[in-house]
Amino acid sequence: MSFETLFTGTATAVGGRNGHSQTSDGSVSVNLGFPKNGVLEPGKTTPEHLFATGYAACFGSAVELVGKQKGYDVTDAAVTVAASLGKVPDGFGLSVKLSLKAPKLSREQTQELLEAAHQVCPYSKATRGNIPVEFGVE
Image 1 (cartoon, rainbow, N blue to C red):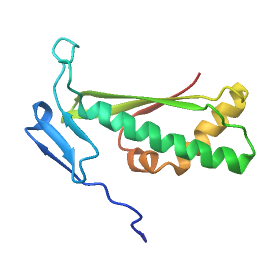
Image 2 (tube, rainbow, N blue to C red):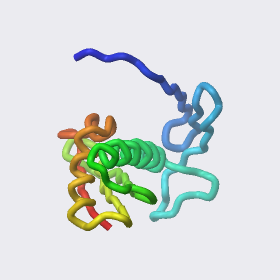
Image 3 (cartoon, rainbow, N blue to C red):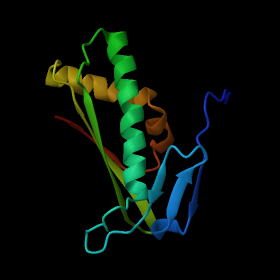
């Protein structure tokens, strides 16, 4: 597989899930925590939040690309990603629920766009076959 690097983001984490993570350029600097009884300490985030944010942004760009190719008006389209940490037979794993809201498209067009964007989004390519991904149309 040929790969031409366009950009590299680098981050360092110290202290794991209860530590701190920061990008090398300082654009992202977060305190991490693990929710206790479903509640996260104020001022902290989780790796799942960070993954969901990146996936939603990347998928949104894929929606824009595919929407333009199909001649769809994707103005105000919104991608929501819920990334979950859970137990799997050999330890822990992730799952994703990904939904698309495209106010200017029919439900069928939105579903078609969601499926097509899933084929081109780099996050989708990276996770395909590795974690459960559930789709929804809003």
